Structures are given as structure tokens and as C-alpha cells.
Picture 1 (cartoon, rainbow, N blue to C red):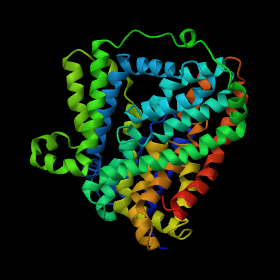
Picture 2: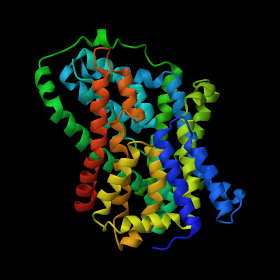
Picture 3: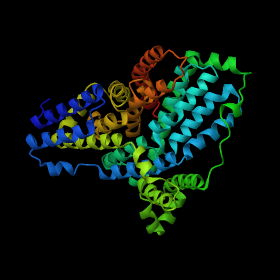
Amino acid sequence: MEISTVALMSIIALVIVVVISCINEDLHVGFLAIGLGILVAGIWGKTTGAAVMRYFPTPLFMILVGVTFLFGMAQTNGTMEKLTTYSIRACGGNTAYMPLILWILTTFVTTIGPGNIAGTALMAPVAMAIATRIKMSAFLMTLVVVGAANGAAFSPFAPTGIISNGIIARIAPELGIAADALNGLAWKIHFNSEVAQAVANVGGFFALGGWAWVTQQQASKLDIDEFAPKPEPFNNAQLLTLAMVAVLIVMVVLPGLPFMRPWFAQNLWLRNLLTNVGTISFILSCVLMLTGSGDSKAAIKVMPWGVIMMVCGVTVLIEVMDKAGGLNALIKAISTISNPTTVNGTLALITGVISAYSSSSGVVMPMFLPMVPGLIKELGGGDPIAIISSINVGAHLVDTSPLSTLGALCIACAGDHEDKGKLFRNLLIWGLSMSLAGTVICYVFFGLLGF
């Protein structure tokens, strides 16, 4: 296979970004990707730096900023913490139900907007404290928290889901996907992620000691008032914040419902305002700011700027690769070892291995999702939803590893009685093994069964 110099240099630039992202967390690969993209395009591609700057994904950037800003205010004004405490109390002290309660709660918190990293950061301290009290190993609790957070990560309201859906929106015309089908497609990909994560992590939980623990805890109860004292009622600012989150969910879902489309078509001014989850978030954020219900300065400080710029920066380099022909070269390489069915397992393995040492949403997804149209064309067929799901699931199943932010958060919050070294090793083995488990799950669910 012949490859041009500019295409080869664009691939080398991407390899440099991926390798550095695996070995040096202190170096921001988003900015590195932009710089390397300008160098490759300018020296070998005869393209100006100004033209490369126009590859910056402004719509995706604005959506991520809008959503994370809104939930930054919900986090800093105490709404999310109080919501978590009330939810924990819902188990009524039934110890055996606690893993289920935590799975549901983490799923809910992640789904409504904060995302898997913020959801884990919110839940890990609570979950690990509970694990100590109910004598559950920190390893098993990590499977519960991280599995639930990653399962819900592809919610259309969550940053990871927004990244995925933003890239899908760009490649949709090449896949023959209509614009009005994108909302339903987003929920389908979210559902696929939930199923795959549940199979891997819930299965692992029960197989590695969870079933024996549940059996022992059947008759056990704890004093919920002592463990999770009833918090003060939601204040007016927090109630308004909850209302804004509810409005966000409703306003994202309603325009996609078949019976609501004629109504929105007649009220174009409203549809113009509700273009996507980002535009809605900015409007709702204004309500919180103007009513004094949210601290904008505090919210800005907790927003994941590093991840946002990582995604956008790598996207710029991928655009340079696409124009240079490097992306097509990678597509041809993957297609030589796959067919329309096995490509799901192949991609899950590749993305899992890379993601184990790199950023799932910041590096792996922006790198692989744009390949989907070319892969389907090169392979002569394939289900785009299945291939997208395989990339997303493969990249995130390994995040239980302590090398990822989610696994590291759980280790940091584990009780003092836990052997942190042993926990690190167990999570590392589990996380790396998920690249193989993801291969099997994606091949069976998305390749053979056609989920």
C-alpha cells in the first residue's frame, strides 16, 4: 500500500500524541496535537496554520462548555451532594441492597449530566466509606461505581456522550444517517454501553466474591441515620437547580419524539433555541446565575477544561490526517484484518489497549470514530451503530484500571484498612483484562447478535 509523505507524517504525529498521552500525564496532548497538526500541514501538506485553526471543532467545544458549566453550578451549590445523600438513605439500611442502590444512583447521577469522571468523583468517597462499613472489598465496590459511571457515560447529557454524538453528527451524512435520527441514535448507543458495562462489571462482581458477600449480608442492617444523617431540605437555589436539570432533560428529549415534531416545526423560534443540549444548558445557566442560584466563578473552576481541550486538539490533528490521507491509510490497515462482523471485536481490542494507557474520550474516541464511514466502505458493509458502540465500549471498559482517572479515584478513597498495593494490582489486572473481555463482548453483542 503506497502512502504519501504527508499522510505518513500525519500518522507519525498521531502516534507521538498517543504515546506521550500514555507515558506523560503532565503534558497536555490536546495542545501538542494542534501544534503537530500545524507543523505537518504546513511543512508537508502545503496548508497554512490559519487553515488548520479552522479545523477546531467549535460546535463541540461550545456544547461541552455549556453542559459542564451548568453542572458545575449544580455541583458547587451543593445540589448534587445533597441529592446523593437522600438517595443513599433510600435503601433504609438494608446492607445487601447497597451495591444495587449505588449502581442505580451512580447511573442516575452520571446520566443527568456530570459525566463519568465527575460522577465517580462524587460517588467514590461515599461508596468506599460504605464499603468499609458493610465489610465489602474496595475492589468489588470499584466494579460497582466505575461500571455504573461508564455505563451511563454515553448519555446525551454527559460530556463523553456529547463528544461521541458530536463526532457522529459530523460523519452522519457519510453514513446516510438523517439529522432527525441522531437523537434516537444517541440513546441507542447509550443503551448499548449500559448493557456491555453491566455484563462485564456485574458479572465480575458476582464471580469474584460479590455473590458470597450478598448471601452473608441478607439479614444484616445498618443504622442509616448514623451512617448518612438526613441532610437539610433543599434550599430554594438547589430546588431551582433541580428544576433546571429536569427542564434540560425534557427539552432534549421532547423534540425527538415523533408526536412532538409537528409542534416544534410550527414554533421555529423555540426549536432555534433548543438546537442541542449545549444551547439549552447556556439558557438554563443564565437562569441560575441571574437568580443567584449558582456561583459562576466556582463552576468555571471545576469544569474539565483539560479534557475539553484534549478532545478538541486531537480532533484538529485527526482533521489534518483526514485531509492528508493518513486516516484512510489506517482504515485500510484495520480492514485487512477484519470483516463486517469481526471488525467490532478488532476495534474493541485496539481501542481497549490504547485506552488502558491513554484518555478514552480525549484521545481514543476522536481518533477512531471518524474512521467508521471509511471502514464500512472498505469492508463492503457493517452496522455503523454496532461499530461506533464497539469503539466506545472497548475504550471505556478498561477504565477500572488504576491508570485511569476513575480507577485512581476509587483507590484514593478506599478505606485505610485496605492494602492499597494489592488493590492497585488487582484493578490493574482487571482493567487490562477488560481489553480482551471487551473484544469478546463487542464481537458477540454487536457483531454476531447485532445489538
